[in-house]
Image 1 (tube, rainbow, N blue to C red):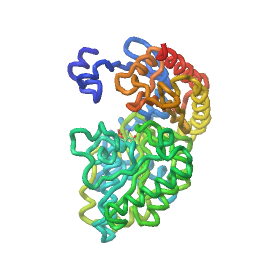
Image 2: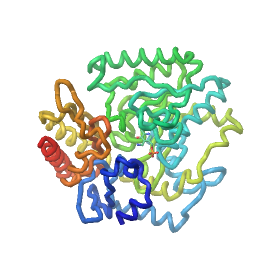
Image 3: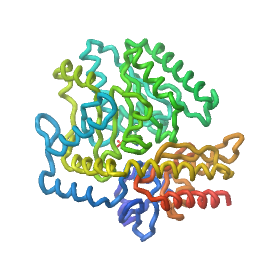
Image 4: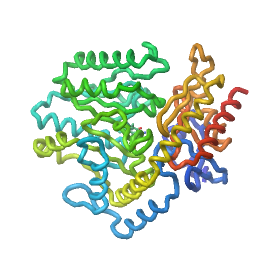
Length: 444
Ligand code: PMP
């Protein structure tokens, strides 16, 4: 199987020459927070797949909902004027749960096309308001917004731009709030003031508010290394956008659906974005689905004024009934204790990882809810990144795997955690213990 995989299946990263050392490991089965590979080796999935299997594997109610829907109606387009019962129900329930007036839901297949859709919607919105010159977009360094051309351009990770003439000329960035290595230090007020000033300066530099369509943030930057903004940073950036009439778009593809504690991280920040993107935990990884939430005023403006232009955007698998049925079953789980368990286990995970702060390799421990990271250094004073983590074929990933733990090693010397929200206390403690073991072996 490994030979067939190597010969024919293209894996982003592992298939590219020079990265073969990463190797490919085939997973065979999974239950709860445990995955089993093709050799029978069992591991705790400290990353919930790719930050998505929030409900854990093998949830019977989800499997039943998908199976029932497959029998009853496996496909109905969400495009044009058709629809399906589960999609209508899911949209209504999501609107009910979403912050503020985010009452309109546009389903996609995942996160990248959700982000792409917000760019379309933002342009439709300004065109409908008679302001087509508002066509510039701003996002944040170390942010990740997808792998499509538009999403990769909004993304600020160099690997996603290389060799592809990205970012596009209407895509701009401001610095991240990243506290551990921030040139202004880690004082929250200084970071907020700097970011606000930088956002205003960037807007002026690209032609003023009359040219800027939207500003994107992740409530916690995920792929950039789990970077948690200081309390008040999101609200301060939202306030600038409100004042200057620029759409504020929250990318909750990772942070949504209980990952940071509440159903949506924006709730904790006390803000309501104009649009919000989600995916991953929406269907907990069982089937693909993403969703854009549009506020009343954005939706109404587009619906009233965009005319023929807005008809030209949609996907074959939008609002897929099986995905919607899964989304409904997963939402039941969040409501029936999964969010609550995630909050308790998240606090335990962060406390456990903070207990490793004295380890010689640990430079920074950060996170919120079931989303955490350790930044590894070889010199705590100089904050020198641990070189082994600087490659996808990191030895840390391999060692953790041998120790029965799946974690994610990021390019910038960071290991990340996003376990399923269904973890037990014993599983969380094991994740921390296996991390300690892995770090000790890395010292040897
Ligand atoms: N936005 C964010 C914040 C993400 O983390 C991701 C995926 N990691 C995406 C968008 C893209 O989602 P997808 O991979 O489902 O296209």
